[in-house]
Amino acid sequence: MRPADLTPIEIADLLDAAYRQDLGLQDGGPDPEKRAALADYLGCHEEARDEAWAAWTDLLENDLEMDVGEAAYWLDVEFVEPCPENQP
Image (cartoon, rainbow, N blue to C red):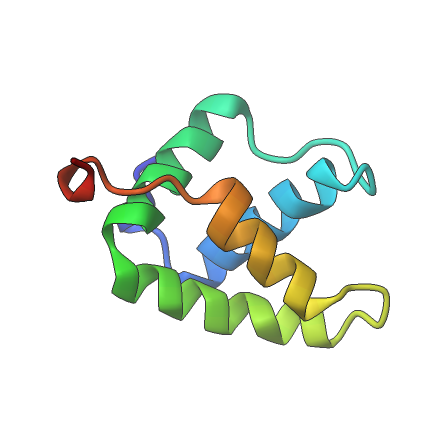
């Protein structure tokens, strides 16, 4: 899987599955290798991250059990890895 080849909606679906897996709401989210590749990609490509977030927000807002603010925190703080080029 190359995250650059995925559409924002496909990335949003992966993020949703990973988030629900982390919350213990479902099994079968992306495997660790896919999660790492996606986290690295989104950390280095802010535009792709923003497009995926917009698509994922649409999914989250349709699910009354999900908190968009908590999902945003998870994405920015717990999931996305900072781009190595931007680290000291």
